[in-house]
Length: 84
Ligand code: FES
Image (cartoon, rainbow, N blue to C red; front, top):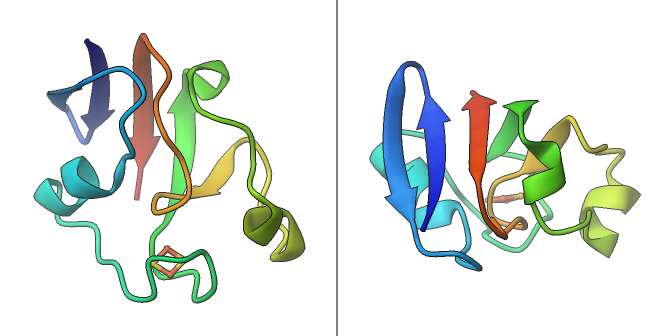
């Protein structure tokens, strides 16, 4: 089981799961859900190595390992801390 932390709250996510559902619980908004609109942009504070690699869509829109679209990343394992 992996963990995702935002603003002092930590929630468990099964290894390999996308971040979207948990981020929605944190109150992070989503729109397109396909890496196009940028609505779900998050900052990765800790544990970027525990996320799946940048998708093509994220790369095209200038994201990097510290700035991701929550609808595009999955957590592999371990702990990830984000800011919105
Ligand atoms: S919801 Fe549009 S980029 Fe994630």
